Image (tube, rainbow, N blue to C red; front, side, top):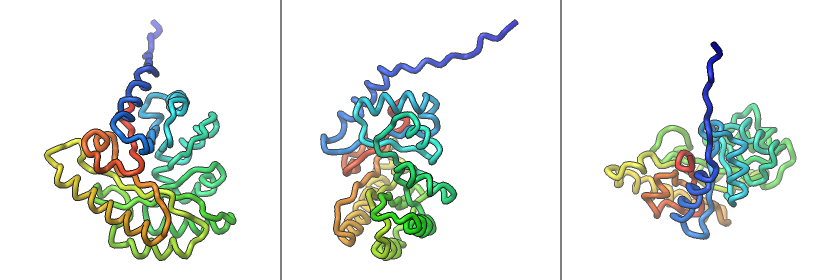
Length: 227
């Protein structure tokens, strides 16, 4: 007897509804990052991204370079943020116009050196600071070190500054979330003042979009909420 197998049906109309609902919660000037890591949370990265690009998302975010390359190979032209870029595929980031998240001082050194070797000028990067999630990101105490390195590296330019809310879905942890938001604001103001140009700032995940308007800044990121 042959097994009938399993069939998953993804309704793109529902995806469209979710996207418009989340966008309705942010200001018109706030950009929207659609997170499509892990095969769009198991829903099909290419089909989902093509739909979201048609809907007008401003950015995509993937976990790894390989996912972003798959998007580029399937006519996704919007900016793509790589959340966990690895040193062994930095060349692909530049070749495919991907924007890496720099989450450690070591990664900053590695990417700026590689960008210099590739004769880049002002290549866009995003700097991630750890404000309380304690999963990934540069410690706030290293801000002077980061600024010194950026100022001496014309090969790169900070396009975005990001962090990640740890408990924005839990309103019992509102004080902790507000502490994260205030620290991120302090870091962002310092970096923008020192560098002298406007930087995209993004800290909100889906629950941050819904529960903490003060954390919307210039961009928001939504992953599981889209699905």
